[in-house]
Length: 308
Image (cartoon, rainbow, N blue to C red; front, side, top):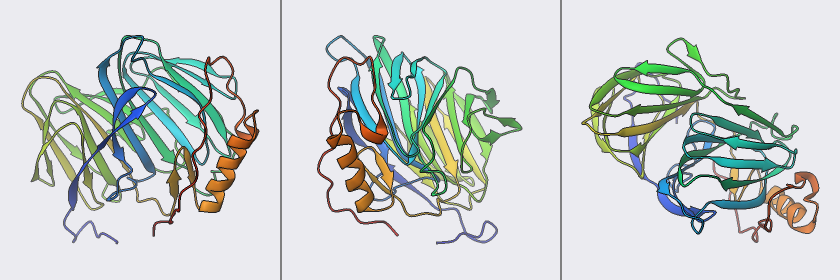
């Protein structure tokens, strides 16, 4: 479906996230869902926490493979140790981003190293001309801070209000964290060619699109805004609030997402799973060294249908 920014009204819908478990930690998964698989190139969104951890409830995710995507980890509270098959060992702390490019294949593990944790873990689908490239890892210890209306904001990726994040992307993207500790409001000017997803992580926000109220957004919900919108109005009634705003032009390729892989066909998924499960050394995905525990094995690939 195409949208004319000058003549088509902005469309929006509120989608419920579903609960999941990653390494023993309860998460809210807002993407993908049955109704909405992607927002731009963003194809996966988990919000973990805020949670108090004990040695029994610490997050431990054993070595597992990825391909065809970038993992984007935004730390809000706590610390996580990342290890990967490139030999990287990197602690992720509040206000920092880890960007791991899987390309043709990589494996990694994650372990919490704090008694409190809150983070957003996202995947970015790589376009066809990039998804078979070499794997890579980048750590970003600081990101642009700005004031958006009465909200404090961190620009995670992309451009906004004359500032640019150092985090690279292979397709146009926006990622921004918005927070307030008391009543706050803001109007954000949107790129009409982008679609957007707003996920409230803490508190609640009254949200309007082009000054049309969408009601109250709360944790566990993703507000999807279709291309054509000109502005987004946010209002926090008081107390602590935090939201994540993601955006990008609709992804032009049909992709499949299964387990930890992003591909284009079931045959690819079968090959990825067989490579990882059949090789003790991980094959093209390599080995993660230093993690104490077993690696995660790929389940049987189910029937998959390419969307489109």
